[in-house]
Image 1: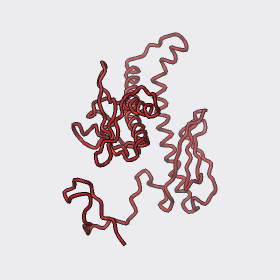
Image 2 (image 1 turned 90 degrees about the vertical axis):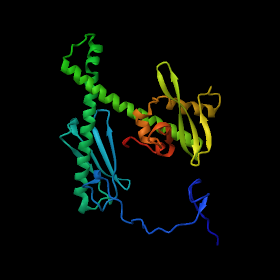
Image 3 (image 1 turned 135 degrees about the vertical axis):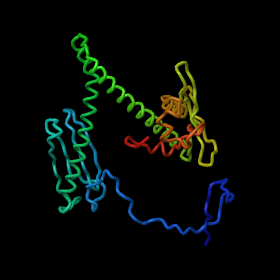
Image 4 (image 1 turned 180 degrees about the vertical axis):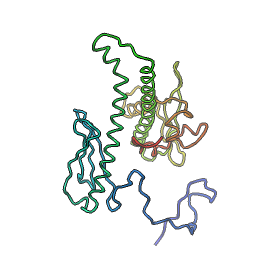
Length: 280
């Protein structure tokens, strides 16, 4: 029987592509990883819950909690009152009777927290639009106090900052997914910078594998072929990014370095795995 030698990265001081196995006295812990703080109160005997929240056409916020794919609780607020919470409880084997009340209490707490956060964002969005909506509907411009104008500005700034972060991170994630579909062995993308009269921006990417071998360069094309259309998609998605990496969200989230040109080298698999809710 033959055994394959242990691979190490090329250029490692131990030498070459293969190296002898070194025994370590460090034994990995077999203990189960600690649960996230957000699961505090959820019965430890149960698998992690699957949680989804929706806003219906009438504005009602509802939270559906599943365990092992089975619906357990559907929680909502009648008349959109976040202080009045009701639920449908489904009878199934996913949650035993002895932990049912604890699981339901956890689900209620999470629903109320999410409903409150959604209502807060809805109110902020309404306040930003209120004067504009009234003026459009009545043709009459409404005067605002300095306090109202300050609140309008604060709400707008908060929304704009969050939107900028969401745009940056989702743009890099979408680009990374498109690149990996074209080049499954790709590991890194060196972002290229272009410039217009209104400032610098990310204009393309040079893609390499884990060993640093150049695989492809994404640049703007005339889109005559399917591949060129894919190239344009990647470039157009990246073009939404500003080129000041040190003040960006995308560099702090996905770059492989911490200063200088390394800020523009993106870990493609890390970026492709991003989802809303991940920290930048």
